Image 1 (cartoon, one colour):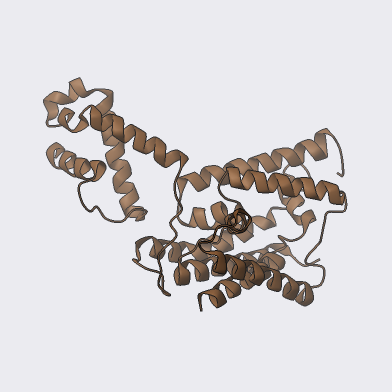
Image 2 (tube, rainbow over the protein chains, first blue to last red):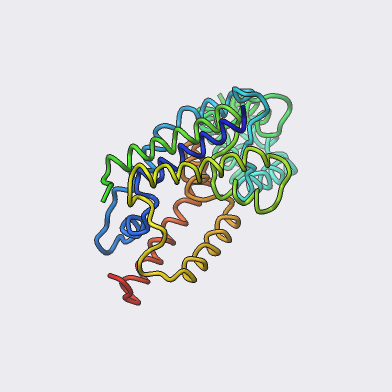
Length: 153
Length: 143
């Protein structure tokens, strides 16, 4: 069943490519040749694909399992995520949360407080986009974020 | 010549549908370069669905070549087979380095609103446009 589904998906993909003009090198070059006789129509391929895939992708980000069982192959983030984790680790070492208990400490916090605020807004934004599952368990960002937002209000 | 914006939109919708089928039913990302890359690495896990997907791609290509004659152009008129092979090597190298291609980063990644994919798409699109500009207008190949 899984194999049949993968086969059908592959076939649909190829038909989509052929129909859209993505299998014609001249069209591709026309799309890329911004300074020449630019043919922007291939932008609609991306538009159509994302338009169809956007909602299912958001569903998949929340769903516990795919319809046919197994689990989701969530792309492993490398560059940006490890950078973020690095910043998080440094912030943790330095005790960012302790810099934020009240207004008085904010001055001493300086750049860190700013960084934390940005981080907090970012976390909220990501939650809204549901890129990450809701907070569960003690994780530096989530627990920290929550305490911070409560104390600042 | 088939084409125009409406065909592009319809074809794109089919690509989105394909990515949706794969993600919703078996939880896999329809990134062509990653799927083929996994095959090249000879990874055992997920061998079945990768082979099935690529077989579907090839079958679909045969079907579409039959349904819409002239839709699949084997190679650009201005490039020799050796040139195509070199270009293919570069694509393979680049997509593995950037962990994704137009389908993986462009369709699936952007649909997930992934920042990393947005960066990837902007990089490869601008690099491709720049290459085209240099080849066509600076070095002056085919106009």
